[in-house]
Amino acid sequence: RLFAPYTVALVFTIACAWLARFWINDEFVGEQETLGQFVAHLFFLQGILGLDSISAGVWYVAIDWQLYSVLAILLMSFSSYQALIWLLSILSVCSLLYFNRSSQYEAYFIYFLAKNFSDSKIRGLAKIVLFGLGAVIAISSFQELWARNVLAWCVALALFIWGNASYPAVNQNNYDLKQRVLQAIAWASPRSYCAFLIHFVFILLANTIYIASGLDVHANGAMALGMMVLVVIASVIASNYLYRWIELPSTQWKV
Image (cartoon, rainbow, N blue to C red; front, side, top):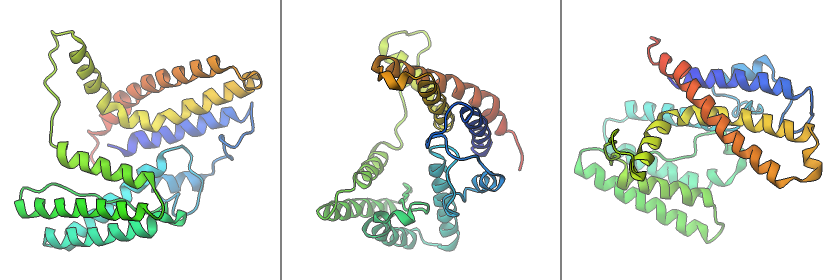
């Protein structure tokens, strides 16, 4: 389900970057992509192999796949959730204090995933681990503040508290502001992954037009802001079609 739009977004990015190179030769466009580079992206190995990313954000998909794979292997290897949580806790502390502070490990899984279980003992242990990790982050911040670790812990805490909450029911016959916001969230949420994949293409194209047309020489802030708005609009529209034409049909594929 996630692989199909990922592949289409990669191909679309390669095509747009190829067009952009006719007008400009800039660092953000990158070098001509190779077949090996593309294949490495298909197997989420570009970071491990030291290859440049074809599109911004694909490293996150690769890291997410690593985390999923490692967690799946650990779940199959441990019969006790308590032992698994303790192991993940040790790995997480090592990550926070060492691996997360060295750029050479950025291509590997460095994040901590936890899950709520119905067993009250497991949930209690997970709560202790979560706040214990928060204490480790706070103490290590006295040496050097890493905002991404603080942000990651805050997100984990928010998911722990509100992760099982659901949005209020959307009333199609009610058009007040709250209902409109809920409708917008309900529409955008399933398309957010596609928007994440496709937005870089429009940033690339907008920068190409901005530089190739000479607008960067005049430092026209209003024009730059207008193009940023157009990038957002184009990303939303493209993500809708990528979701409808690729992601939804791919859910029916049998692999």
